[in-house]
Image 1 (cartoon, rainbow, N blue to C red):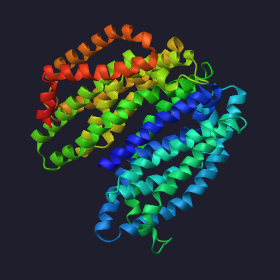
Image 2: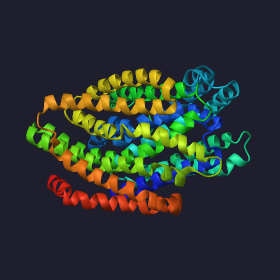
Image 3: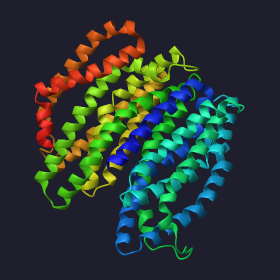
Image 4: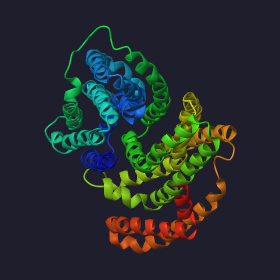
Length: 488
């Protein structure tokens, strides 16, 4: 587990280094807009495969087959059919790029649209690298080998850093250097993950019939694909509407989303990853009291971690963005636009953390379609608000719509959970949480003008640890840490 955490942390750090390199080389430009639209479908597949979809579908089936001595045969069958299907899929994606790219970004200028179509043709093979890497990583996780699957995305990040800093200097236009770097990084992921599987892949390969367990894997993937469609339509609508705004608007949303997703990826996912096994055990035993305690524990822990992060990003978001991105082609005006979009996203930060928790609770209860249906309701809310607010506030309106839609999702899932297990969420700790976060917020607002002469690096270097220390002290004084220790 700790090796996996180390690999994940390294990948996250290199992810910020990647974004900083891209910001330096391209800023919030039309060229980077074209790249992001071209990357949309490979990135969407990465979400469903790399963010738990393939793990939920393949790993349990593989583990069960392994107990009967069929695990290696299932793995070889899965790899074989991936290798047969992926070249056809990549070729079709490249050929159809002139048809689907205009759907994703109808507002692009002709030159940007042409560039995005060409980039999509270059980047579509990335789906093959990501798919093979996801399958290999799932098998390694099932074997209890966590470091390499967690580390592999770092290799992709390194490839994109090389593309932005080195290859972009010799490519024409430079954005094609970033695409080549992404492909090199994808190939690097495969080269990292396949060698540890030599023992699994060594053996007879049978084309027909496929392993009987593959059908179950496909059926398990369908709910994940449904959830992906709901989530990615939101991004599609945002990108399409942002393509009608000023050049660089899609890039602005992307930079803001990177910082928004950081506490979700580190804090919320950690809480829900720990909560899911407990919730599943209590649900399997029909232990409703235990299930309610585990749910309340996750709710309290999520709030205690996410709310101070939200306040800190609102207060220190501008200097943090300056430190991370403002250099080279990324200007002070780009930083200001990104901070405004970040503010819109942050309205839904706690909501999306709760969606992670509540959806896992429904998975544990054996109702995986409810989160998909709630996400569909949130999608309708998001699209409606997008169409309304983009005319009023541009990229801020798109980000704010995403935040509000997150609350629609969280409240619907939470209300259904409340009916299913009354008392599962104790709201009495919200007042101490509000006091602790409010005290930290007030102190940082008072101190920040004193830190301003130190510049953004000094403000971040002192303000972040100071905010953490203030919050921890207040949480201890108000009994939050004792409540968390009791829950643990």
